[in-house]
Image: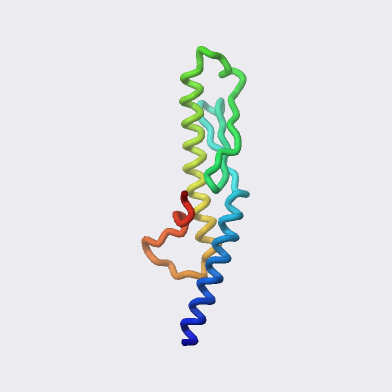
Length: 112
């Protein structure tokens, strides 16, 4: 009986840590760029695009297709990096609380 109560306390502790860790993900900012820095995109650890910057030299209707491709590439690079940092953050926040279970990926628990 005591072990069950102890375990439930741990579960509640893990839930609180997960909430704190998830909230902190909004503070992580990652920048991706393409075209040697001509287009930059910034996203947070919650996979939300914060801003996109386009170099003035690209603002030309004749360059529309390339600008669109560069934006997609920059955003995808930033999203990939945000995934890596989010997983690292979640692992650090839950370190010592949960055992390391192969295949149990806390980084994917909040992906929507």
